[in-house]
Amino acid sequence: MDVLRIDNEKIPRGTNAELELFIARLPSGTKIHMPVNIFRSKFDGPVVLLSGGLHGDEVNGIEIVRRLIDLHIFERLLCGTVIALPIINIYGFINFSREVPDGKDVNRSFPGSDSGSLAGLVAHNLCTRVLPPVEVGLDFHTGGASRTNYPQVRFAPEDKRSEKIAQAFAPPFLLHSPMIPNSLREQMWNLGKAMIVYEGGESLRLDEYAIEEGIRGVQRVLKFLGMCKTAPKPRESRLFTRSYWIRANTSGLFRLKRHSGQRVLPGESIGVIHGPTNRYEEVVEADQEGYIIGHNNVPVVHKGDALFHIGLE
Ligand SMILES: [Zn+2]
Image (cartoon, rainbow, N blue to C red; front, side, top):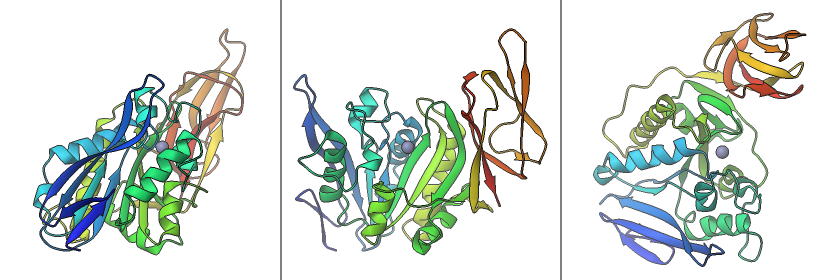
């Protein structure tokens, strides 16, 4: 591809570009743009999308894409193109929110339309102005609502191309995860493109380990695709084909005794819920052998709240 077209801009081989895609104004009249950075090698190769902030408060993904740009490795690609999109949902980002201001989730609004609600408008802009040339996507997320995720890559088991990308990323954990209707990942699958979702850390909290694992994973994928010469050594990832949540069996003050990344055994005490005046105390137990792939950091829980996400091998 001699000339890459993004939003009617022509980007020749061997050049970089910084675009600002106008989405819609704020009620104040301020124009909101989605920043897109494009890096093209002189030589043909895969077109890779790195996207963060589809959920506006999931800052680790935004930081991963920002730091990757700052490392200047994309200016030295052996072949191909990197499209770096640090913040898809600018509205959520400036409001410290997962959603757009009307409460809708952009990642449940694909492919969207230009005449629907704001979430659909953001999705539509991404689909029509950025996605057409993309072949491989890496979308960066974190746990939401006080929940933290141990660094992990999710992909659908039927999506064999994405499975290869996930393995090349080599995160600590790999997780089979069905396609979510109207998500960006499902949209990419429908378009015949590969996409993995990286989850690391918690919303509105920078997590150095999750950020570093994300950066290392991208470097490994670029090396796997022949776009980079060097990358950190791959590791053996642990694959979970199923997962489930352990929920609060009562309401009260919640204390963690185990955390994400750790192995648990059936009957093991992994947390405790106290009544605030010590009238009752309930131990939270694991009921199957597995690994904690995510946990809830919230100090006060209701009966039924999700506490530990357990991955099963
Ligand atoms: Zn997310």
